[in-house]
Length: 380
Image (cartoon, rainbow, N blue to C red; front, side, top):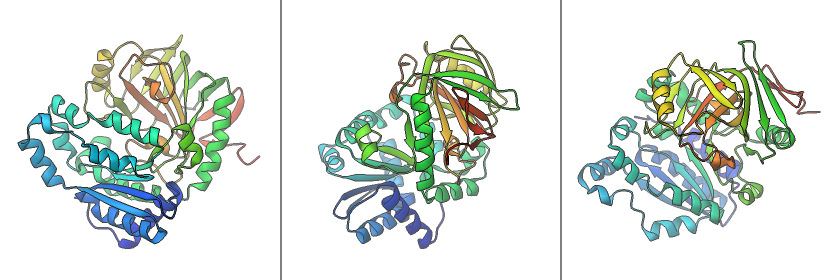
């Protein structure tokens, strides 16, 4: 299980999330949703919200009862959301979700039809929070386990420590750096990524607005529809021209297949090598996860071979968090496949895979932006 954490740690997390990420104000209505394994953290959020003068409401999903429901209730009754629950969300100004369930192994073993029913309302949830401008933060401590730590090749205690530390980091430097990167990503024409490991890849930008997850959800984010962030946060992301990619990208960190009809959860990858020509992935290899990648890739529709996103990490407190490796400061991550959710034009393939690289050089229109993974020019 998750174990106990000092109240001082829980409250420091709660204060940072409420004050610095959600910018929660006196009188605002806060909805906190948690699973039973992380209720102590949710209780700290409720307490700190009241200290701020906000109006918190706590909703708890008991894990034991949830699994009894999955095994005993008719499948047609799962994943049903009542009008009263939608009304509660819609009436909220801000929202924190401490994700679960903890037993991810049991979750993965569920039949695909059952998983689909449980997640059937995810799209409606995202549509509602965007339309209503509800600022929402998600935190994943409740999804950490020995099984997943082994799968991703990380130490469980370090993973959990980084989730906590990365969620309590001062977001102001990330905000400054993110704005600097956003300007280049919005106005630039060409990106070149190089590394001493042999990486040399050129991509084209398409003049699309970048998204900066800097750990703060402010009025500008709400107006842009960027109302949901995961903490720890820290990445500047933009969709690229899907028609152009030329060269080789060699990853030195943990990547994954983040979305595929072949797997209920992410497929871990490492040691990836991607080669592109004329805007298409022409060859690939992985030190780990190649067979799983090949299966998912072959099953995906056209568009899987196209470049989708480029991101640059901003968070100085994360180094090895699975699924959030791209948040580490200076890490450059490349995504292929579907990117329409971020404003791209690749809608055909329901497939997304990404690979990251540390300490790369990155230039936009010939101007150095990263040298060895370090931002240059940001203070000029």
